[in-house]
Length: 143
Image 1 (cartoon, rainbow, N blue to C red):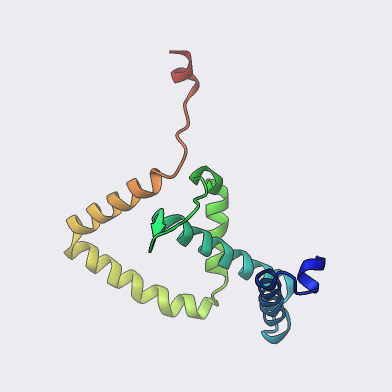
Image 2: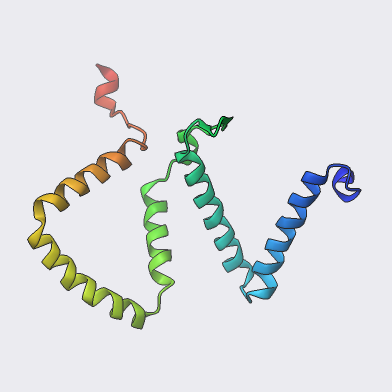
């Protein structure tokens, strides 16, 4: 703390000042409550970590230290809560205005490009499933 407050490590001091400015902006300037501000900060942190995880090991000759994918396991319950929280952020009027046209457009597009959409969804599912841990059933453990 002393190095930061006395400006002995200017990089660390600037990082702390930037963090405090972001916290000030999130809490006071935008008018968010503590819960909303923390949720937004956690969302931004998750987005940063996701993008960091997708970066290659070397970017412009600089080595990037990677976190293990096992640190980012999302259970089905948490995923469901994430979807509900995103949907609950919209007003019902906005959901109606956006949802109804999307439903009709979605069904028409699926009818027209069924094979392409099925292959894209299959590719997306296999991509997502490669990050989920494989659970071994008790029958497989015994053999």
